[in-house]
Length: 175
Image (cartoon, rainbow, N blue to C red; front, side, top):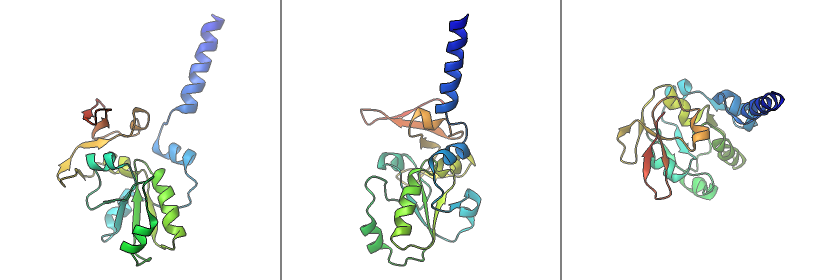
């Protein structure tokens, strides 16, 4: 009985410590709020901001917000952005799966002198969770969305979750 009780307490501790319950709790845990957030509803009211997708290319290729440009995270090059977008007052919205990686890119843009940078609160997961459309690499509407991993995919409540396999094949996974 003591063993069972100890195992139960340990299981509850690890479950509570390592699971993400909501996007809000996860962002509070991982982000420093160094880049102002913009909500999905606020983004929808903006007149043609630059949308920068900071996820991996394979995630972007599965689906992304219409008109978004892939800038990556580990492959992000501020020099390219400075050359392609010299107006530092242009509204820029960065996003990733939920807003963690994009905060890092937003910080780099702010440090480079861009003045109107926002981080999409909840990222593409919140965009899809709120039933907004996404497009694939051919610009066709799709329900497929790269869920990054099964761990992070728990925060995605809508759409068809997909993951890349080692053979580079996209697999649909049950919600």
